[in-house]
Length: 117
Picture 1 (spheres, rainbow, N blue to C red):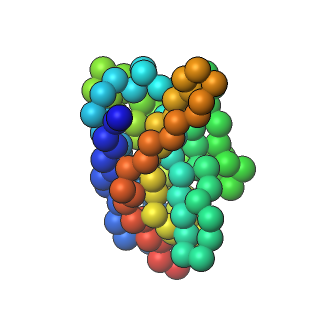
Picture 2 (cartoon, helix red, strand yellow):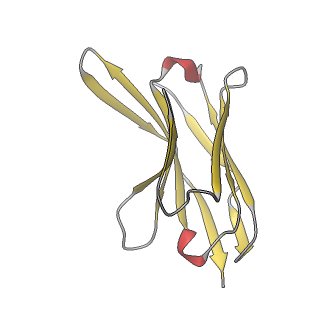
Picture 3 (cartoon, rainbow, N blue to C red):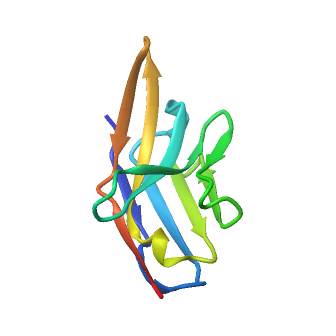
């Protein structure tokens, strides 16, 4: 098991920037990928960005968001620029492991990001 703890969410005006962080309780090198997902009210959870063998972004955030990781500190970050009201939601840190053909997903409790217009 791994514990994930997000931080850094808050309220920001449209066009602003925010960086959210995720602290893992064990080495993030143990996982095939680390990522960020978000869930808006009334919507399904969706992938925002992931960092594994390669980096992947949702089309809606390309060019505005950057995922990064500090393997020594077991930290994953999401730098968000040019924020839009539609970026509002709860952002969840995810750790993905593939073991003997089984997929395991671990989640943090989430951090709220609210973008006002």
